Length: 166
Image (cartoon, rainbow, N blue to C red; front, side):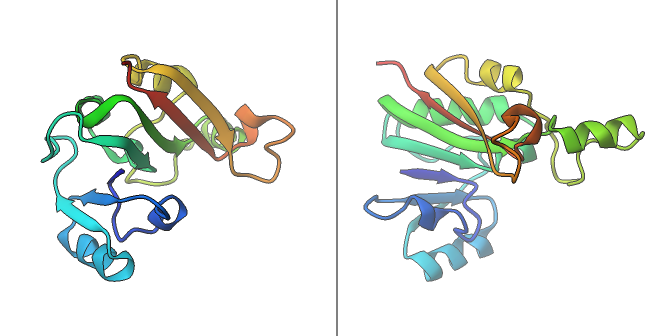
């Protein structure tokens, strides 16, 4: 399993048990902390520039809360596609930037996103377009007290899963 943008490994323990995990990040200090905390393998890389792995080397690539921080998420998704084995899964999450709270902020004349490090805002359609080379793309809405009443408007996060053809 390849964990893109793993930082110190904050999300990694949720899916690492029973899996060999390699974490990738652009922050060398964060990678050192991930190794100390979790004992995972790590590799330094700028995920927009490329990944230092052979093609078709991973069963799963994870991009949890990463794509919204990138200037070129299309390049990162292409790199993830390259390193995935045929039939492998690309999974991750992005903020639901068009949830009700963000829409209210926009109507009030403020930017819908409060995190200045978020360079991208993804609608479900934009996320589907980003994952166009994959099969079996699924997007679900998660996280939030009122998600059960209206997922698209109330969820804080869009969680995605896609399968590499083959």
